[in-house]
Image 1 (tube, rainbow, N blue to C red):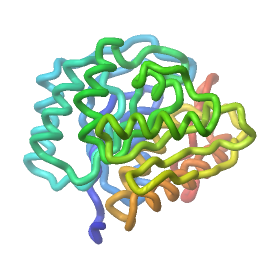
Image 2 (tube, one colour):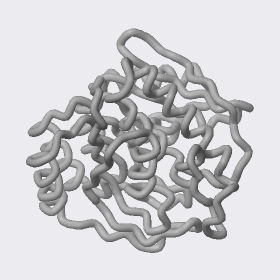
Image 3 (cartoon, one colour):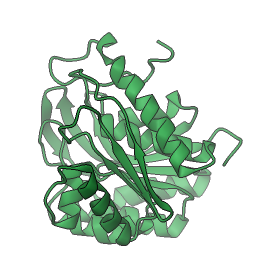
Image 4 (cartoon, rainbow, N blue to C red):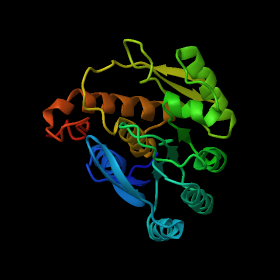
Length: 268
């Protein structure tokens, strides 16, 4: 646990609407007391109603950004989001092996809230084989976990835990199975570690503004990992922060579709 202000790097895509991706990550880092840095893996043209175009820079430029950051700045934690294609996945994996950051939170971003594909199908295997073994924590939602395991999406908590254990067996140190896609009245997540499984309960908040919730949770965990004594504590505190950001999202008036959460609800 660091006692200085942590430097936290997000490796992800840009959301021109500001609700997800790099923009959400940097907001969450700032809200939780971390200095944010970014490596942009893709540019998206999107708003609260959907993604209309994606531009992916060459993997060599992603590598150049990674080298520029790591060569000069102490990085206390890394959050990984949208990676777009297999070449970018491999470039990020190579940099993580080269620089060995203490904490890596991998958010397996595959599909946007508006059902737009954000990861090429052939890149799923690269993500599973190259990045999962380098992760401190992987944070899939239920469809993403199913895609990584070539399995059906979990419909109950027993299957969530089983799939989380299967993902951890692929090399990740821990897995957070997010239960937002369940039909239950609450929204339980399961943290799967070598020491066992921990259920993190939470209310299912009835709001329409849920754009960027996955990005925000994973970046909140990355921001808190250097500031907390354990992964479980960092994850529980991040979930509480996200719940507050969702509950207060109606205070924002952003777009006509699925709006963002309120990252700075404690200040504004």
